[in-house]
Amino acid sequence: MVSTYTVMIHVVRKTVGQWGIRVPSRQGEEMRQALIREGALDASLRVLREGSDLILPLTEEREGAEWFEFEVHPGREPLPRHELVGGIAIMQEDDPAGAERLLASRPSLHTIVFAEGEVHGEYRTREFKILAGEPTTRTQVTEHGHTFTVDLAAAYFSARLSTERQRILSQVHEGEIVLDMFAGVGPFAITLAKRASFVVAADINPKAIGLMLENLEKNRIRNVLPLLADARHLDRILSWQFDRVVMNLPLSGTEFLQEAFRLCRPNGTIHFYSLVSVEAEHTDRIRELGGTVLSERVVRSYSPGQWHVVYDLVLK
Image 1 (cartoon, rainbow, N blue to C red):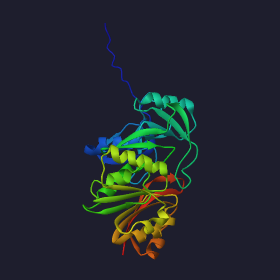
Image 2: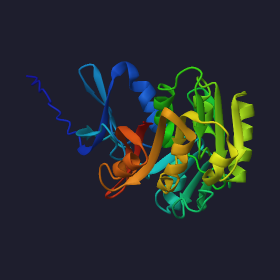
Image 3: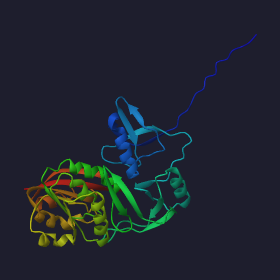
Image 4: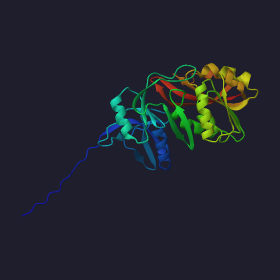
């Protein structure tokens, strides 16, 4: 007599709590790629599906994020926390062994670095330690059809502002004259040049201006004027007012608010980025200068108790 047994296998799936961002399924791949560029997608966790939406796991809290339970990818060791800038990964810890694992995990990476300190000085630069790969801080970043040459040690660049650049582009009207007061290697200026009639892109860092010139040529942009200048003196150098002013200097942008107001025409728009500890931290100062806050948005968490925000404001 032959006995037949039915074997029941119960698979236990490990889950962890993590921040996630909800997007419609049709936008899922575009958002996933954007998060990968920022180093903000937690690749050790599975994407959730709820109805017609996808929930993408994040490495940290951001605007619009909610707390979800995600399944862990079986057998996948979590990679070290990092931010991607082109072919360079910036790790949060000085971990050479982790850097080698990270380098081997993505063919697109050529260098792994550790940031030895925060952005500092009037040139907005950081020091980096090479942990693995090619001994360089120079790379190419592709973003929404544009290509930027970036040197992390020479000039400030944030891949995390890719979504912000597209958000502001959506607000620019044909024919606008735009000022980017702290242009760096030119990502905001080059992005906004698609709709603006003319963009002035200023920076005090000569190396940033040199990289910007490369990027203007690379992207065949002819309506951006690079300007090596201290933002404190722009109102003396430039003889006209602008329809829109971008102030991407979160560490000390409040020092230049008055200059931005002088350079912006009545009813013009200013996008003012800052680090804040409380909501509406700069609202009173903006009102004193004659501005009205249209919105205050959290771009990302910066540190415990501190957020990177953008004020969209209009002059009265």
